[in-house]
Amino acid sequence: MGEKNYTPDAPKAKRRQWRKKRGDAMQQMQSGVLDHLPLKERWSRECKPEAKRKKIKPLTENFEQKERALVLSVHRRSCKVRLQNGEELKAFYLAKSVDEAKEFPAVGDFAIVGKSEAGSENFIIGLEPRKSVLTRPGPRTRESQALVQAANIDQVAIVMSLESPPFNFGFADRFLLAANFNGLPFILILNKCDLMKKIPAEIQEFIELTDNTILTSAECGTGIKELKKKLRNKISVFSGQSGVGKSSLINLLVPGALLNVGEVRKKDGKGRHTTVASAYLDLPQGGAVIDTPGIRALGIMDLTVDELARCFPGFFDENNNVFDCKFKDCKHQSEPGCAVLKRMGEGLISEARYRSYLRIMGGMEI
Image 1 (cartoon, rainbow, N blue to C red):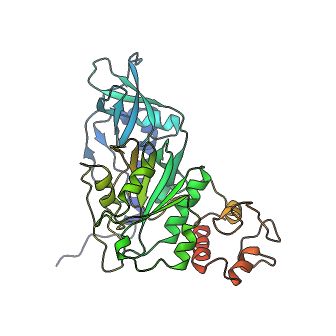
Image 2 (image 1 turned 45 degrees about the vertical axis):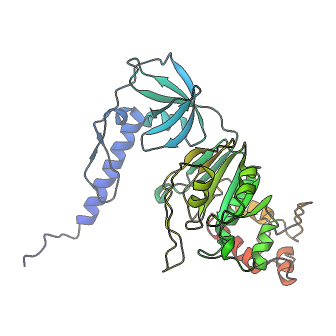
Image 3 (image 1 turned 180 degrees about the vertical axis):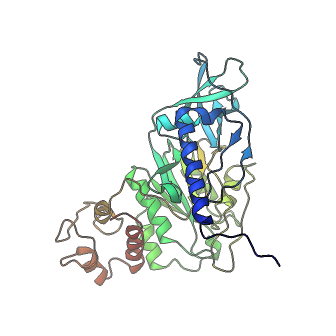
């Protein structure tokens, strides 16, 4: 067999090629050229071949015909929107305009859509101010950049299970913090209640921190009527750890949704991702749910470590919200006079809640 043509400098050359390619693409985005290229640059370390895409015509119009629209779903270069007359259509958004606005459209946004002169294409030319958002961290190369999962929501509802997969305190606490930080009601949906024998004490402790808790079973139909009542006439973020039955519940709430249902992996007990992008789904009884992917991490983008230590749910008196540690900058680890460690020793705070706090704090910049 012949020897491979390999040189030690090959990986460095490829990295230099990738950096140059990314730098050129960023210049094209800022100048507006990227929106009119017939090829879509794929910025990857492997420098994969370019993928062909439809060329978008340059914008020269003043968009005299503008309409307000609700964003129903977001794709790579376009959004599905609903006009006020009920018509649903595709609207493109441009790299240059998004870079200038510093915001990507999100499901639940109200956008201003303009028609081209020919009337064949629609473009998102602006976003109305959001009353509330739910964010998650950006990709690995841009982890500090918040990506909006949903906008203009009234409440946060997450689906969890006690087992298959087991209750994930880190996931639940992040959503609870995000809801509290944005002043949004928080609903905990404990699905697969037909498999439950007894709710453990540490989960019962978390239940006491929620605004509402509903026991459901997508298999038996238990709790569906109560859930519909809580969601009626509200815009609710609907999320959950993968494999807890979120898609099965949505299929019961929204007839015709026909969302894929995934099984729990036997190897690690974790769920399989079936929802790949956020989507706006109208409820028959009024209101809507914004179905979000079963992400395993949610970013508390605007929360500092000091703020987390002072407001973590369940650590202090919920009614008076009194921070009673000896030192104002106490992180509840080994500081003398820490009220949280004292309550743990007295059994008033479970180890599960404390471990969840440490995991969230460990993922934040200190």
